[in-house]
Image (tube, rainbow, N blue to C red; front, side, top):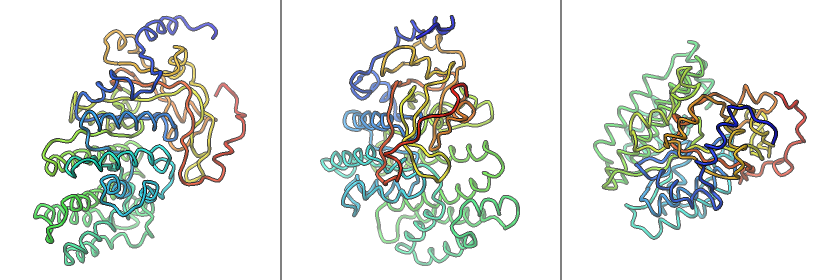
Length: 447
């Protein structure tokens, strides 16, 4: 393994003494399960959007949270209307014949992020689990992202067409403000941001206010309160997405903060709705990238003025929110080379020197977790160190700049699961070149 710098050599014995091996998977470890279930929110991360083990371990852990700990909601980094179709399927009220069909609304790049074998299998398990329970105890599957501007507008109109045709007429008039952009959300944001066209801010705010009043009054036809909530949340999403697309041309910080604030607003809305309709406060498992679920105030992100779901969840729920990250050193990942290009099975380079990934690899255990609340371990890992984040694009030729940031790990997460070698997530939608992978790496090793 070669000589380690003295500082890292001093770290390794403490890490080895503190790590908890996961020979049979994260979900089989009762200590990790207890930490995840300590409160009402279990925030379960991932270091990439395309790693099989992250999805599989997270799903297995969530199954135990649902079956043994009373969790009744899975909330994922996905668009609200697309996830609602899956929600209807797993709760036994949808028209889809199987989970793969229920996932078919995830048509936007990257389709593999939610249309993959692990999510399909989890949805089938959840439907089967729910089938043995009364409706009030069935666990749901929800999205918390805000990219579905036009899809959510259509969902609002569809609901109002059924419940209140006159309100639907008013909503169509307001949403017609977006008609000039060919359902291109970014084109709208650009035009509105730079004053090329008037913004639709007033219209979406007015529509949300009216939807809130209608839902508070109750459906005119005595319909399903869950469907009313679905429509209300779509109106809220349209209002927030309109602002998001305007802010995205003013810099990363403002648009990032808007997006994560919307995610937490969605969690809070779900919390209220499920408590009111199910008779008790819900317990929720949240699936998203580490960069959303680890406390941003402990990272370079926070130093730049960004906040995220993990930080806001700690502010809102305190110790009732457990933040669990995942990491890997090397293997393969499903990722694109650029935006809107096909997903490929890419080779993940070993962690850079000075990173947590490399440090955990040096510990010599194939899979383990760390309880970062243990005082000795927290002190040992208190110094800032690099951490890798791979999204839907992987750029190994600029890996340090594109995929690493500094973090103070014990302040970022309550626990970290490390799986040293991982493999690519398998898409459900055929990716023409996925099975062939990418050519052998040719970039210099020092980048």
